[in-house]
Every structure is written in C-alpha cells, then in structure tokens.
Image (tube, rainbow, N blue to C red):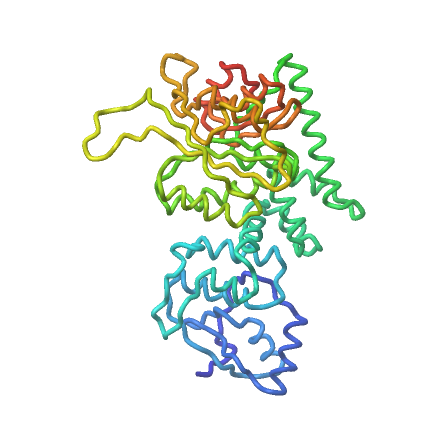
Length: 432
C-alpha cells in the first residue's frame, strides 16, 4: 500500500535522525526506488522507516510504500527497536539501550519467544536479533549492563563522544556507583583518559575509608559494607583480589536465578586474579546447580568437582515422603595459573567436609544462614596466604571475612540485610 507522506505521524523516536544517512538513502531511492516499505499503525503512526520517510521528503515524493502493522503497544515498540538494531549506525551505548529495553519487554533466553499474530509479522527473540547483528550473548550482556547502570546524565554527556562506542570504557563507567560516575565525568577534561579519571576517583575512595578507620580507631581488617553487591564490587579493580568466597541467596525458581546471576556473577569473577580461586556456596537443588554451571562454563574458569559440606546436627522432622537434606554444595573454580593449594594438612583436603552447622546457642550472634567457622577457616587457609585480599559480596553476618582477618588476610564483604549487618558488627566486623 502507498500512503501520503503528509499523513504520517512521527512521534518521539528512540534514536536521533542522521542527516548523512538521509542523504545517502535519498540518492539510493532516486536511482533504484524504495526497496523496503515503512511500517505504520492503522492511525498512521510511524513504527519503522523514519530515515526513509525523510529521504522521500528530500526527493519531493508525495507518497511512500508502507506496510500496516496492528500489534499491541508492546509489539509496536519492539518493531521500532528491531528496526534500529538492524541498522549499522548505532553506537555501542545505543545498542545497549535498545537491547536492555528489549529484554524488559520480552526477556533474553527465557520468555523471549512471544510472537505477534498480526499480518504474519513474527517478532524475533532478543537472541535471534543478537545473532543477526553479529553479537555474542556475552557481548549483548555487556552492552545491556552498560546501558542499565550508567546514570542518565552521564549517558547524555558521553553520547556524542568516543566513549559511547567503546565497550571497555562503557563498562568501566558502569561498574562505578552513580555518584562516582558523575564525579569521574567531572574529571574528564579533554586530555585526561577515562581510566585515569576512574583511578583518581578510586584512590580518593580508599583514602576516605582509611580516614574513617583512623577516626573510629577500629583495629580490624574485616570490613563489611551495608550495600548491594553491585555497588560493592565496583570498589575493586579487575584482577585485584586473591579469593572470592561467598554464600549467595539460594533460589529454586529457574525464572529468577538467571536474572540474579546476571547482576553480579561475571563482575565478581572479573575481580579475581588469574592466580586466585573462587568458592561459591549453593544449595543442593538440581535446577540451581544446572543454572550456575550453565553460566560458569561460559567463562575461562575451570569448574572443579564441587565440595560437599555435610552436617548432621540439624536433621529436622522425621522424613515421610523424601529424605532429609543435610548437605550443601560449594562450587570451586580455579585456573591453570592459580596458586597451588596449601595441602600441608592432608586430613582436611577432601571434597566432603563433615562439620556441624551453627545453631541458636550462639545467641544474638547467630544468623539463620550462617556458615560454620571451621569451614571458613579451612577454605581460606587452603587457598590463600597472609596479606592476600578476600571479598564476599553476600557476607551475611561476616563469617568468611572475619575468619580471613583472623589469619591476617585483608577481607571485605557486603550485605543488604540490616539484621545480618548488625550481627556482623557484634561479631567484630568494621561496618561502613
């Protein structure tokens, strides 16, 4: 069908008009005509083909070929997003913004195969779109991470700079807290590279923490932040810690777990040195094990046989339909370049660790998800040495970082649960 160009309604668009692209299209359309129709709704609102419309205007055309799309509001927005993504003139930042919005609408890897039944127009999944524009799943994740986590005012400030087209620099910004992003932008004065501005910002942060410690006269290396894991991880440089050891929240819902892992897992692994190691405590649910492995096998870490922490002092009720669960798994990751295990205590070096679970007899220093001190001691002593840096982004009441500090390791953790934070403080953690 053809439509009068003056009847087309152009609302706010997700990307700016590129006048050079318009002129290029006009030259092409003048020579060979309009190859692809624009897409409009029944009330003539433009969904896809803004540059084609402007090129037609430039040529003095009165009509343009159009295709009618009668999808719902969600599907209409997806049409515009898909149209933009298939173009090659988006920056890395713009791609991330489009992909992030697309994931909000249809999901990525799950719930992402909703289809439109209108006019035989099938809406593609985000995975399909990514493949068509030549992006791997990891590249899609990195672009979305940058788009989501860089604050709007900073995105606008860098939109027309080379930073907007650099995945590395965008991720550097995205890993900073919102306040630090704005601070870093204030130090970008043309000549100074982004990495230098970030380095100066982090140096000031360390100085502030050290000053806080001097003022409070706290003598401890176990520091716990009342914060979410993402802001916490932003405090550390890539390849800067020797051991990541953590007990993240468990989930039996496969729909929730991938989104949860997206938020922290790859960032956390990036902080660990190539000589370091990783311990991640998980439950014993098959779907949780499967989902973690699916993510971890995409990394360059070697997934060792899991450790098993087993306990017999919290057996629960007499079983009726199934056996009582009395173990949890601990994922162990290392690299070919990792430091060797300290195996001088050979009677501890087994994949099964039989240690009683903490219980309520600890009084006001007991936390419901607390890991035993002995388990923490063993894992830390097996894999680190004095002076090493250890982080725990889900520190709970601080067991891992407290035990690390007792053995002269520098340890940092965080948790958003104020109950856990208060218990950690009673146990001796320095709370920031």
